[in-house]
Image 1: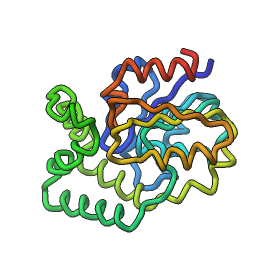
Image 2: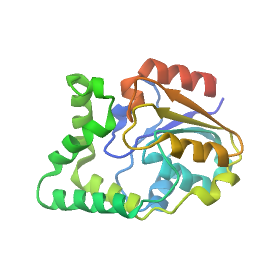
Image 3: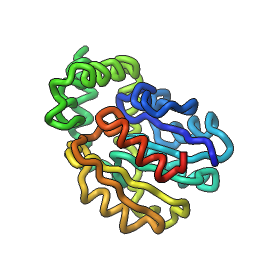
Image 4: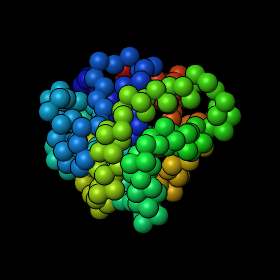
Length: 223
């Protein structure tokens, strides 16, 4: 079986995958384009691998599938979507950039927490503490790079039909970032794809439902 590479998304460090017990976890913080992020990831990955990508990391995964698809044996797209930013989303991100410039980086994660986790977990101090720590780990410059990469990303929908490896889509029922419509759009366009819906979870499935995450990954990847 190929080694599994886990990619952490926006404002997420390696802590996102703390329950998955893997040696191959990569963070996305050093570049401000999807092409550069994908190139760095490929340079640090095994020759052949299964790829598990969360949130923003899904955008990098699509770039990898454009650059070197032959290296990816299986692909898990968790809490992500294929389309480019809408003008409204870009406006929101530009607002985040202004908050950083104003020295209010800490406010960003506080605004995002209600979108990221199931409503029943918003008072979970361990979970919210992990979200805050990951944001601090990524830092202001890492976050600025991420936002610029996200805003400039291409629409990946036209290339979905060319993805030849098996693909698993994983969606948290209470996700405040992506929607079931996003998942169904990818499901209908990718030739060999299936969808797992995780009840009682928001966007942060690996942290909210770690045992369910592991069961889903074992079922798809075989380990």
